[in-house]
Length: 508
Picture 1: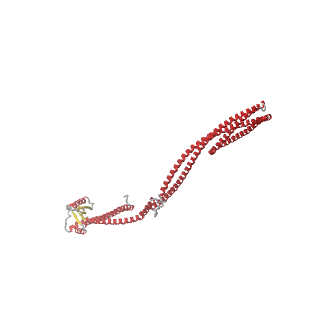
Picture 2: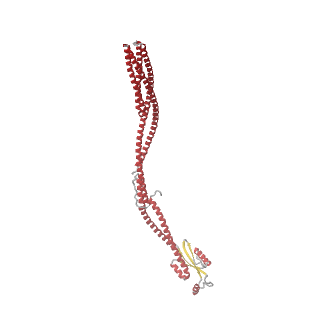
Picture 3: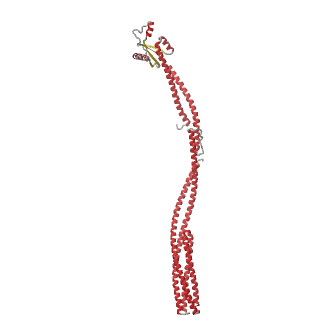
């Protein structure tokens, strides 16, 4: 049943119902007609049975014979054989027992043939006595009016009646079948036009949608349930079309966003790599600057020691000069001592100049490393510049001292020309050596300031190195996060491609 077409299902359902209704109606009509015929037959028998009591017996018998009936006169003790006799005996007994009983009927069958038998009681009347007495019959002698003397009845075979009933039912059934065919044809046409054709149209529209055509729309021809179904389908198709269009746009935006996210992740990865490399470079540069500052600190300490030593030598030179002036003018020993002291001062000044040049070179290297560090190295770049300036000032002081020593040496060399000149020169040497001592003290102070500055720069470099380590760790964590973002963007791209492939199956 589930595999049958809808038209056949409707036809079968409606046909079965109509067939049952029409056949039931035909059977009811046939039964009604049969009942009416049988009732008319029974009424006729009853009428004949009752009327025969008031008719001449010969007349009644002739009338019944003309109607295909058999007239019966039943007297006590004179009964027909078989079932009819049994009915006659029972009827007389019933009539005798119940004076008010006026009729008895029975459907009997003998020798395979059925018949109807009706009996009415014949009770003695004055008319019966007069009628029978007129013809010389004394049948009612010793009887009084009201006594049961006999029963009159009529019987008729039921074969004719059954044939008429069968023909009536057959005609009714044939008419019902004809009406069933006509109604089935009309119902089929109506169902085909009002149900099947719209449903076939809906089926075709559903098929187009099943193949991915979301532009398919059902034709709404009526406002019945099928029309409402078509309208609901059109609404559903429109909403589904709009939903898939939104999904398509969303998938495109997701794809575009995933591409941008992937590009951003790649750029971030590259930037993080560069930041990590710069951090490592800054850390290495910081270590180089720190080592240079340590060397600079050592050089500053050496310069301070040399300055103190040179100051001591200068003081000794002043004392020797004073002593030479006191002990004798123009003595070679005093001049030699002055020259030797001057030579020692020259050596010390040359050492200071070497330290100043090395300090200047180290400050230049520190400035270069600070420039490599970028914003992180601006602090110690300023300090390196101050160190370079201190080194230049130390070198300038050393050059001035060297110039003074050269003049002193020239003065000592020419000391033998004149004692007075020597004394004057010694006084000049004394003054200049005192100036040298002051300059050397300044160099010592600058060296100590340079050492303090180097210490501060070292602390700054330690802090910078820790920050760079933190930056490197953060860069590594950021790189991991960026890789996760890249994987997420790849997943989004895959989802977007899947959505796009799914939407491309439909015609929007």
